Image 1 (spheres, rainbow, N blue to C red):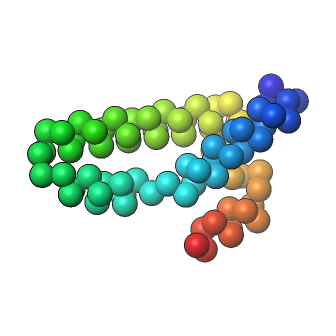
Image 2 (image 1 turned 45 degrees about the vertical axis):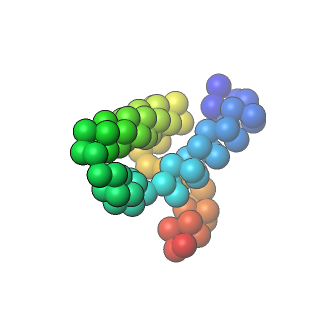
Length: 81
């Protein structure tokens, strides 16, 4: 479906771009601003778990092992930002 349906392909490619831009290290730093340790840890864990789940599903569906593998120019451009 990923290879044959342009809409689904574009949806997953855009998702890859968003995941590539996301930085879980920065997310962790923002989480540290929360003074309540229990809330901080539970919210960050939810975000991190969803990020990891989405990454794994993108890799499986698109049959890739790294984000933006099919678009190396975009990957290079985003990596330099």
